[in-house]
Structures are given as structure tokens and as C-alpha cells.
Image (cartoon, rainbow, N blue to C red):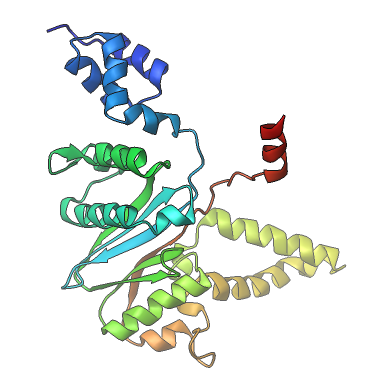
Length: 289
């Protein structure tokens, strides 16, 4: 059997756009014959998937899994190109398989997740197969996994547009759901003031300072004004200080009582991904030339 070198893998990858592991498998299966390896990739549908790798996948769904004892929880965002595919039963089946796999195997990052196996195939292979079968670019964007001695609750809004995973020190199912819904609706940055990132706090102070100066306030009292106004900022971004969405007379801290909010993760589908803007008029014009 021919020795498969890194250079051979690199050449095949550049020629086909397929993943490194797929190229290595193709060369191994064809005894190092690059032309045959290209055919192997085409036959497996991987070339078809590779052609889609440059597309923007900003749709999809955020999915959650919580174990029956509420001690393990997972939140994952899996992207595709259209809403239609996000509701496809094959996409939903892949989503369920992956979220349960993460809960069971606890991968430390995306690389470890993609290299791990579900049955005979790696997660990367399953995603590649789904891309080829469904006909759209599919990718696992991010995930988080919690283990807790307290209670983990999840909440999925609008079929996967927003997802929340929250860990509380205790409480019942309703409390967990209420806090998860609070996080989905109000998008806090941290549980409390200690969790607010220094850069976020300093940025807010600078904005408030400039606002006060623009209002014509004397510079000698601006810093005191900023300190006063920063309290309002904390009430907006700290979970336990927020006004409770189901009762404006209470804060989240009031609702929690003796229960502690330990941590949370909130994913909004596609956030931070620049979506492609379609110019359908130009597309039609190009087709009729």
C-alpha cells in the first residue's frame, strides 16, 4: 500500500475542497491515486458537500438536552442555509443525535466533537453526509455542556431561534423555566455584577461620560454622575437585578429567594454571522442575458 503523505493530502484538499480527513481516507482507499481519490470523493457525495462549504449558513436551530435527573444539560447551535431545511426531519434527527452525543461523551471543544464517533462514523462524517443528502451547507457552530449538583433547565424559543441553558442551586421545574425564559427575553450579560466583563463595564462608563459631557454637565461632577448611572446599567445586564418579566413588581433576585443562579448560556441563532443579501433582480437579469 502506498504511503499517504501530508503533501498528497494537501494537494487533494486544494483540488477538491473536501476536508482533510476525507482526503486522507480517499487516498488510503485508492492506494494514493489522486485521480481515483477524486472519484471516490464524488461517489461518496463529499465533493458535493465541499462545493457548498463557502456558502453562508446562518439559519438552522438551537437545540437543548437535559437529562431526566436535571444534572446534565447541553445547548448546541447547528446551522444550515434556509428555514425550510431547519424544519426538515433529517436535520432535526441529526440535531437530536448530536445533542445527545455531546451529553453522553462530554467533548471539550468542536474539534474533539467532530472527531468523536457516533456508531461507525465520526460526527464530521455525519455532518458531511447530511450536507450532501439535504443539499445545503450544514455545520455545528458551538455548544456548551453543563454538569451540576443542583438543577439544570433549558428553554427553546420559536422552534430554535433562541436557546437557553441555566444552572440553579435548587428550586423546582417551574422556577427553572421562569429563569430560563427571563434570560431568553432579557439577554443578561452575567448572573451578577462580579460577572460583568471589565471591558464591557469600562466601555459603558466611557459612553455615559461622553453623554454627560454632551449634556453640558460640569466635568467635575461627571464622574459622580457616571457612577450613579452605571447602577442602571447593572440592573439591565445582571440577571438577578433585572425586573422579572412575569411580574414587574419583583426582581429576579426576589423570585429566586434562597436559590442561587449559578451560570447560564444564551444562544441566538445566527448572531454574529453576516447573512448574504440576495439581489433577486440582478440574479434574474443575469439568467436572461
